Image 1 (cartoon, one colour):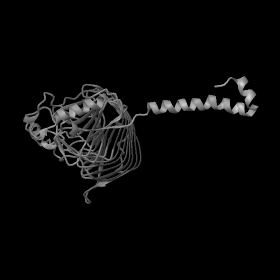
Image 2 (cartoon, helix red, strand yellow):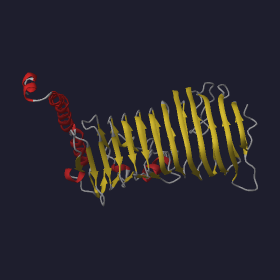
Image 3 (cartoon, rainbow, N blue to C red):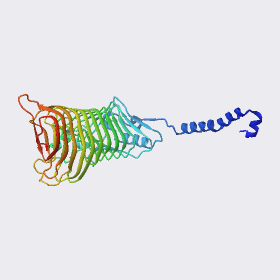
Image 4 (tube, helix red, strand yellow):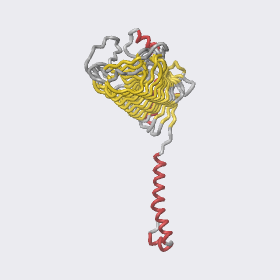
Length: 414
């Protein structure tokens, strides 16, 4: 660029100003654009078929998926890992391990992923998990495909007390900003989706299906996780449609159709542990022919708290226990001894809940004998018996709070 003195000799004052302005701001803009162009990365598409996957539903494709994941995890650009349609991929136990280099990884599942059908075909000592996604940021599982756990042999084994454990289908461990959209999950040996120690998760538009008598086949289980949103999904299983475990907070669940199953549960909490659960919001959900509607369940002998829990705008259709707090939970039958300590329950509201109860007790607030539930609030709750000739009833034990416009009345609520 010419010196300012030379510029003045050749141009008038205003022309000099314009030239200097361009020199400062025009060059800066060019530098910003160049920097932007250098930092923008295009998405890289990978396909499991290119890494040896066969996709005939019989050949073990575990190694092919592992190779494809290793390539994806080492990429310097955002990844879409394709599991193509019109194929069925048989996978044994597999861990998709992070941390990974890409800013985001999307697993686009258009085909079907199958677990081994027979327990004898399970080739891993780890029989608690099928597919694990561990320590990955910005992971998305998306697509119109299906994840099928083929769990019937595991259910039979557990019912006959020959197996003490069974694999969860998909475990998301220590992942941040996870998204699961539009997929169908079928017949997991145990839980279909488990989020453990995750921060930031959005699950929407999924379908989860398992028989009503399949043991412990929770749809979605949260443990040690925060900032989770679950919406617009259909879940029917042999256990909780959604269960919320300890050390979990800031959960928003809405527009869920649940049934069959055991409802949406906070818990179970307090089994030989100190629990901490808060800021749970469940709204605009529909329960049909379920064992429970909205439930909080804790073991005797626990400690800690569960608080700031809201159940609102709920429709109940022929459910055994539409509203239930059970601080005497015991899934070992009658082999649980009485204990005096308990998880403290407080600031819990049930609002705008309507429908029918298939059993006499539509509202059951069974709180600890020694640690009362406090701040229980019921408002605009109308629950009648599914049998027209019968009346619905309520029961309370050491529950303290208030109620307004509730059928059946809860005069037992102090």
